[in-house]
Image (cartoon, rainbow, N blue to C red; front, side, top):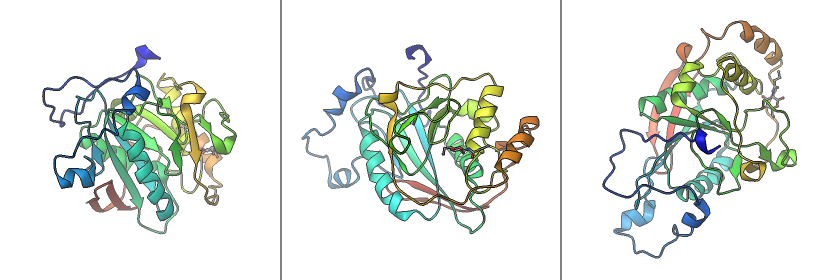
Length: 278
Ligand code: BGN
C-alpha cells in the first residue's frame, strides 16, 4: 500500500520551519503525545491546540490535511462520545484535520448522501485535499489506521465488532471511507436520491468502479472499529429501485445538483457544525 500514499497539505495551513511529521511508526510517536511539557498558556491547555474542530501538530509539519465529515441528526449521546474519542485518537496521528458535523435540521427523511455532498462542498471550499466520510457511531480501535487519503478510495472500517470483525461484502464502502477531494468531484459525489436508511453507499461504490478506481483496505487488524449501539433506522424501501435507475444515470445527480437551505455554520471548539434544511 505504501506506493498508494497520497500526501498533500492544505495550502491554507501556514507552516513554520519545522521538521516534517513522521508516519512510519505511529505507535511510537503516540508515546510523545502525553509529554509533560507545561502548556504555553492557559488557553492552549484548555483547547489542547484544537480550535473550530481543527488541529495541527505543534512540533512538526504535517504531510496530510484531512476533513472529517460526519452526518448527523438527533444523536446527542453519540456525539458526546464520538467527539472527545476521535480527537484523542487523531491527535496521535500527526496529521492536520478538521471535524465537520453536517446536521439535517428538519423532519424530512434522512438523506445521508446529500448531507455528505454539502459537507464535501464546504471542505473543498476550505481547500482540504482529502475527505474522510465518517459514521458517528464508529470508533477506530487501532492507532495504525492512518486517517489520510491514498491514491484510491480506502474503506477504513472493514472490521467492525457488530459484524464480528468480518467484512460483510467486498464492495461495502459504508462506515468510514477516505477519498481524495478531486476524486470525490470526479465521481460527482453521492446520489441525492436516497431517502431513509441504506443504499447510498452501495451506489457510491458503483460510481467508484465506474470511474476505474479501486477500493483499498488496510489489513483487518488495522481496520477495527467498535460500533455504538442504536436502534435501526427506518429502511428506504425504494433503495433497490433507485440503485438500478442510477446505474444508467449518475452525471446529473450528485455534488453538482444539491438543493438545500443553509441555516448556519457554527464554530464550536471541538467541531464545526453545518446546519441545513433539505
Ligand atoms: C447494506 C446496505 C448498505 C449498508 C450495509 C451495512 C442496501 C442497498 C441494497 C440495494 N445496502 O445492505 O447501505 O451500509 O448493508 O449495514 O440496503
